[in-house]
Image (cartoon, rainbow, N blue to C red; front, top):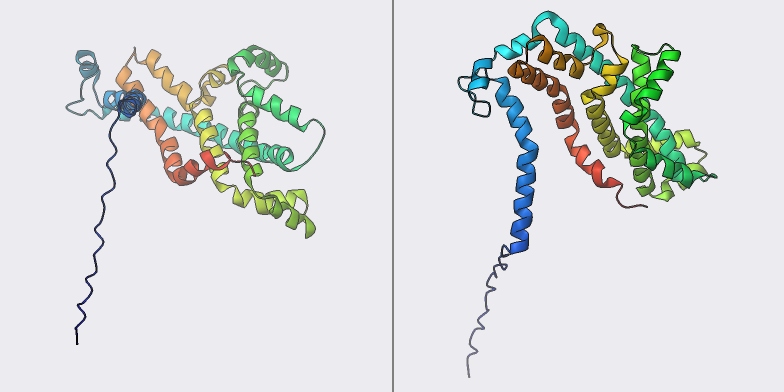
Amino acid sequence: MAVDEPLVRAEAVPVEPPRRRLGAGRFVRQLLLACAAILALYPVWFMISTAFKSNDQYLDNTYGFPWPLDVANFSGALRGGEFFRWLANSAILTFGSVIIATLFGALAAFAIARMRFRGRDAFLSINVGLLIVPPVVMLIPLFTLYTQFSMVSTYWGVIILYAGLTLPFSVYLLSNFFRAIPRELFESAAMDGASHLTILSRILMPLSAPALVTLVVVNSLWVWNELLIALVFLPDEQKRTLMVGVTVFQGRYNLDVPLTMAGMCLASIPMFFLYLFGQRLFIRGLTAGAVKG
C-alpha cells in the first residue's frame, strides 16, 4: 500500500513594493518646495537671531549666528510698562472684532447655505468680490466718515472696522462648510419643530468646530498684525496697538534693529500659542468645506 507523501506548502514570499524613482519632474518640484520653505522661514530666523544680538554684533555681522547670546533687548522691550499696555490694546481689538465677525459671519453663512431667498447668489458674489478689495483704498473715505461721527481714537470704532473687513472671509469660509453638512440633519431638526436659530446654535455650530477654529486663528492673525488701520485710526498714544508700538522702537532708539526684533518676537508669542492650541482643528478646517454637500 503506497504511502501518500506529505504535501509541501509553499510559503508566501513577501514581495517588496517597487521603489519609486526620483524623476526629474518630482525632483524639481521638491526643490521648489524646499526653496519656498527656506524663503518663508528665513525672516523668522532673521528676527530670532537678531533679537539675541547686541547692536554692535548686528552692525559687525548682520546675518551671522548670534554669539554670545544677548537677552538685554527683551528686557529693554519690556521696560516702562508700555509693552503690556500695547499688548492689552491689541488683545481688546482682536477679541472684540473676531467675536463680532464670527457671530455675524455665522448668521449670514447659514442664510446663504441653507435658506432660499431672492438675491442669495448675488449677495454671495458681492461678498466674494469684497475679498479682493484692499483696505487701503477705503482708508480715506472711512477716516472722513469716522471723523464726522467722532469715532477716531476709540476702541469700538476700530473693532467695528476690523470686524467689517474680516466679515467677507468669514461668510465665505462658513458658507462652504455649512453646505458640506448633510441636509438630512436640517430636515429632521425642522420636523421636530426647531427654529433656524436653534438649528444654527445647537447643530451647526458644534459640528463646525474645525471651521470656527480656522476662522478665529486666521482673523486673529490678521487683526493682531495689522498696522496701517491701527496707525491711522488710533493716534492716541495710550491706545496704540502692539504692532504700532513696536515700530516706535525704530525712531525712539535710533534704528536699534535688535531691540525692534526682540519686540517682534514678544509680539508673536500670543499668536504662536493660539495656533498651537487649535492646529489640529485648523488643518481640518482648511479642507473641510472643499466638497459641497
